Length: 133
Image (cartoon, rainbow, N blue to C red; front, side, top):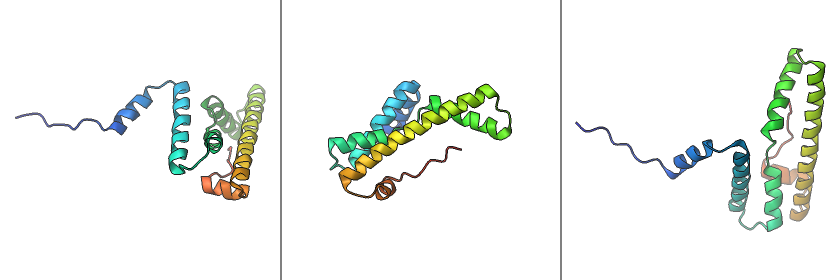
């Protein structure tokens, strides 16, 4: 009796296995590139400027900020936030606000390029205000 035959992994399965092995920094770079490729394929008529703006808009918040921020928010909700942690929460909140303001600037620039209202561009891209908590 011969052992059951298994099919070779698909290209996508191999890609996922490779992606799992990436460092966080390389994963962020890879993710940004995939976002750019996706945007280009979805609307292949984009100019270089539009592609660059979409890449910046789709760049996620760094885990080095987002994860600690969420942990501190949870501690605040539980009433276990220390004074030092409160200062850190304010620091992370300020960083998130700056990043979101920068992202909005890119969205405004894209809306101007497309000659469309900002809300319409945000709807088209599936971008909605973030709920930080």
